Structure formats: C-alpha cells, structure tokens
Amino acid sequence: MHIEAFQEFCLSLPEVTEEFPFGPDTLVYKVRGKMFALTNLNAFESINLKCDPEEAIELRERYPAVTPGYHMNKKHWNTVALDNTIKDSLLYSWIRASYDLVLSGMPKRK
Image 1: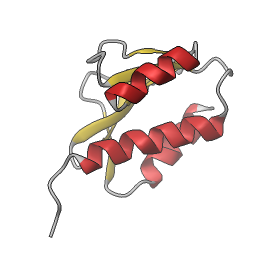
Image 2: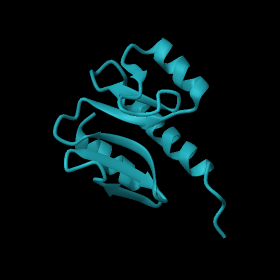
Image 3: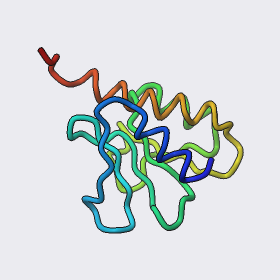
C-alpha cells in the first residue's frame, strides 16, 4: 500500500477528517473527532488502527506484521507493519473495521 492509497481510502469514508494533532509528521484520520487511523507521513512504514481487544490479540497471533499499538493503548490499538506480507485488500478491511468500531461507540445522530 502506498500512502496516497491510504489517504484516499480513509478520506472516502463518511465524515472523516485528516488532521495533524501530534505534529507535522503524524497523519491522523478521525471520524466525528475520534481517531481511527494514524501513520507517520514521512516514513510510511506502518499504520495504527483501533481494534476490538479480542480481535486485536487474534490478529497479533496470526500475523507477524501486527503488533500492539505503538504509542497507543495496547489493548485497543494495533500497529500494522507495511512490509508487503499483508494484502492491501485486508489492510482496507482493517481500516474500515477501525472506522466502524469508532463510529459504533458514538451516540446515534438524529
């Protein structure tokens, strides 16, 4: 996955904003003000994604490229190394799952 594809996919999701709350190098995607994905803009080597705690453990056990979230709550976040061992289609599904997880935890809008 290239950074442009990552950006385009994240921004294609409804109500998503692209922000830099941690400085100019950390690209953060939020839905309704809550983070669901982030990466280093200059060294696009991994992405951090929110994950259901039980699924997070399963993914870490199944995929060597998936580790506890770097600089994040290790229970709720995974870091996925972009080392070409995981297909882009699977990465897209994990990004969408992170987005859906964050959105599902918010109050319903009228």
